[in-house]
Each structure stands twice: as C-alpha cells, then as structure tokens.
Image (cartoon, rainbow, N blue to C red):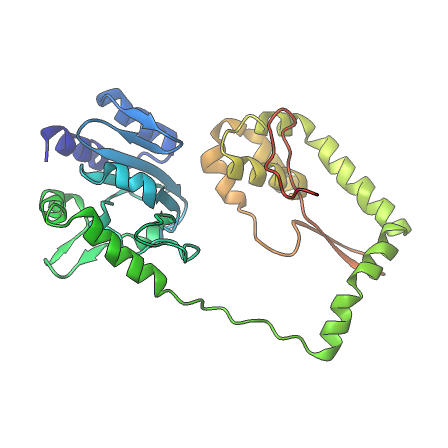
Length: 297
C-alpha cells in the first residue's frame, strides 16, 4: 500500500481516545487532502474511508452502500468506528472483507447492485489466511484482496445475501385479538371526541412550548436521525432528563445517545382511566422538502 495509507492508519490508531466523529474527521482532514463523496465517504487517490459513531462495544451501523463501495474497491477502503468511552476501531472494508449486505436486499443480483454494508457484515476474522481484520495486518489483507476480482467478490456476496432467512415468524391472532384489532378505529374515534383527548393535546402543546427554543437549536442538526431523536427526547423526557439535555446542545452527537429512544408503539405514553394512549412524534422542518408518501390518481 502507498505510504500515505500507513500514515493514515497510524494517525487513527494513535488517536484512539477521540470520542466524537466530527473530531476524528477533522483530525484526518488536517493531515490528508481528503475529498468528500456523498454524505459519509472521504477519499484521496490512495485510500477511502467512512467514519461511523457508536455508543456500544458492538458495531451494527450502516457503513456504505455496495454500489458506492464498488467505486473505490481498487484502493484500500476503511471504516473508522468512533466509540463513546471506548478505544476506536478501524477495519478494512474492501469487498473481500464483506460477508454479505443488509437483509433488506433480496433483490441483489450480479446485474442489480443494491443494499448496504452493515458493521456486522464486515469480516473480522479471515481463517483462510490466518489473519484478523486489524491494522497490523492491513498490508497483507489488501494484497489478499487484490487476488480477487470485483465480480468474484460480488458473486459471493450475492449468494450469501440471498441465503439470509428471516428470524421472525408471522404473528397469529386469536379470535378476541382479531376482534380487538378491528375495533381500533372505533376506539380511536371515541377517544378523539373525549375530554381525555383535550387533556392529552394540552399536555403535548405545553411540552413543546417548554422546549421550543431548544427545538429551534436542534432543528439545525444535519443528521435527520439524530435531529428527530433529539426533538423526541426533548418533548417526552421528564424534568430531570430535560435539564440534562438542555445543558449543552453543542455536543449533540455524544450527548443524545444517553437518551436513546426505543422503537415501541408510541414515543409518548399517557394513561387515562378510559384508555392508554401512545403518541408517535414526527418532526418536519418547514423549509425542507419531504419525501412523497403516496400519490392519488
């Protein structure tokens, strides 16, 4: 590999304690003439790198699309994983070191390149050459990668991806659950016309009013996922949690993950005597265009 690649890897390893993605990107860009391609990938003539952030020891983030990886597969490609409170990691992610792509990519074919590489899809062990995917072996790993063509690796990834089987089974409802589901529209209509609905609406409006200034700050966050979860946390948190959120909105990336949200039936739960309510909170930046959900003929 070019000497600049080894210099890059040494820089990342030596700065293993950096704990925000932006700080790591800045450190790399100060030392190398990086060009940004899309939202997350940076490259020089000699290597390409994607930066990811995780609060956990495990790493399952979306790293890169397979189509974008094809563009840079002829040079060393890396992902730098910035981890909160833990040493950072760097893996080589050329196609030789990709096991498969996301399970939502069943349409992946040799002539239909689609799907994303997740952190869990990166091969950390390479028993066929008795090596692990870590900096001390990157020279050997890239030499190994150069022994395969893009098509050879793509064929293997297609086969592995198409062999993925869902682990969840179809939910089967009994008779009473089925009737309860069919009765949901009536219950919703009844609640909207009740005094409890007015109480819930007033509660949500008051919560939004209490944090409106903070939401204006949060609206400037570029990352859609981070922005939505931050605003959701501001609205739904209890007073103590809210105080922590309001203390310092300048460190959103690291701070937000302490208030990680759960994917449940609703973001905000309030219970009344007549019903339990689950409110899903969505954000809309008015000056940004939204995706079209449906079109009516």
